[in-house]
Amino acid sequence: MTNKTALGNILDQINFSTQPLKSSSASESNSINVSGNIIQLPTSKIINWKYNDRPESELGNISELADNIKQIGQQQPCIVRELIAGQKYELIAGERRWRAAKLLNQDLKVIISTLTDSEAALVQAAENNNRLNLSDYAKGQSYAALIESGVLKQKDLIDKLGKTKQQISALLSYSRIPKNINNAIINYSLVSPRTAETIKQMSAKGEPYVSSIIKIADKIRSGKIGHKTLREHIMRQLESKKLEKQVMQEGRKHHDTYFTIKRSKSCFTIDLKKNLIDELCSNPYKSDELIKSIENIISKMFNNKSPPGRTQ
Image 1 (cartoon, helix red, strand yellow):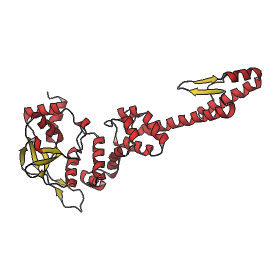
Image 2 (cartoon, rainbow, N blue to C red):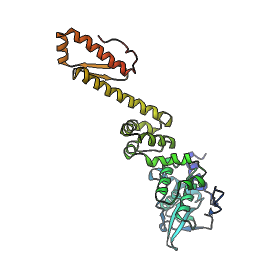
Image 3 (cartoon, rainbow, N blue to C red):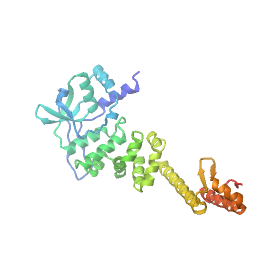
Image 4 (spheres, one colour):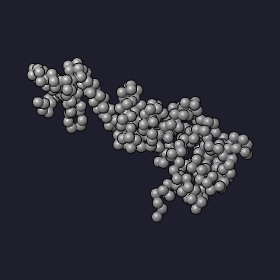
């Protein structure tokens, strides 16, 4: 029985159609034609396009794909365009097959097509649009780079890929997340476009939101926190910080540095300073005032509900 990885390698070779990519807009009658004769080129004559959309981390097992090509041959040609007549070509689609052929030191089956940057970008996007082994993060970053460089407009992706404006906007969110959050999350392969969009929106609210996102970066990276629960986690952290600030202010206001209150998941810890203990011994009235103040603070920490018990 063919295992899942081997099957994936076969599918990687055969799922890209070389039929013209039709425009979905009624006002545009042109199509991108990538059909033509299949020829073989030395891999040394081919360079990767600067706008290639597959990051190193998502190339997969090239050695396994090379073994597959060695056994059954290259089933699907790559798409290239000519840079220097007969001398140098640029790879537009089929990076994994190209790398596998380089590993095998054998020629690559290609179709040479005359494409503008815009057309090349859409051919590449069409090939990878439905690929399961290319993350949404990689697609989103690629689309953003193409738009930023002026190769494509957002409308081109919507029209040619059959995606909604909301879907494209969510994919572009990956490129609009602050750098310090990126450094914390590191790997976005399990982070959905909608989660990326929520991260972008919440981080734009200011530094406290950014800090809250960074604190739960591990859970975002693993997919444990998605767009449905992300806002809830952030707001819970912010509320906790707000309460901590209130406690500190209350402590300074009423008792200066006499006591501190710390809250954990299941209990409170109240630390009394020595100078306060000395004062309580000489002034019993101060003890009642202290207890009342502490109860008020704890009540606020329970969102103005009655505290779980009176501290004596």
